[in-house]
Amino acid sequence: MGETSNINSEKIKIDYENVDVEDIMDQVRKRIASQPRSPEPESPVQPAHASSLAPSPPQPESPLSKKAKIKKVMLKLFKPISPLIKFLILPVHQELKDTIQNLYATNQRIGLLERNVDENFAHVRQKLEEVDQATIRRLEELNRVREYTQLIHNLSHNIVVELTKLKIEQENLKLKTRIMEKDFEFLGKREKTLESKIFG
Image (tube, rainbow, N blue to C red; front, side):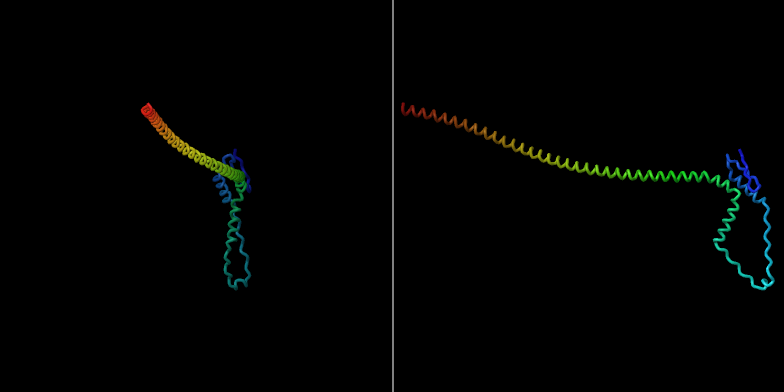
C-alpha cells in the first residue's frame, strides 16, 4: 500500500497507488518549516579609515541575477520532491513521446494519401479527357448520321413527289390515248360510210 521516502532524515509518506499531490506538498511545507534556520553571517569588521570615506551607492541588480536567484530558490524548494516530480512526469513524457510518434506516422500516412489522391486525380482526369474525346467523336458521327438520314428523307420525299407526278401524267396520257382511239374509230366509220356512199 503506502510507501515512505527518506529525504534528509525526514519521512514523507507517499501512497503510490493513490498519489495525493496536495498532501505531499503539505508534508514538504511542514518539513521545510520545521528545519532550523541557519544563522545569518556576521558583517565583516570594516577598517577605521573606511568610516571616514563616503558610502558608495548601492548597485542595482540586473534582471539576469534576479532570475538566477529566483531559479536557485525554486530549485531548493522543489529539491525534496524532485523524485516525485520525475515519477509523475515520466508517464506524461512517455505519453507525449507516443503522441509525437503517432503524429509523425499520421503525417506520413497523410502525405502518402495525398500523393495517392493526386495520382488518382491525374488518372481520372486523363480518363475523362479520353472519354470526352471519344464522346466528341461519337457526337460527330451521330451528327453525320443525322445529316445523312435527313438527306435520305428529303430524297425519298422528292422521289415520292416525282413518282406521283409521273403517275398523274400517265393517267392523263392514258385518257388522251383512249380519246384518240375513239376519234380514230369514229373517223374510220365515217370513212367507210363515205366510201359506201360514193362507190356504192
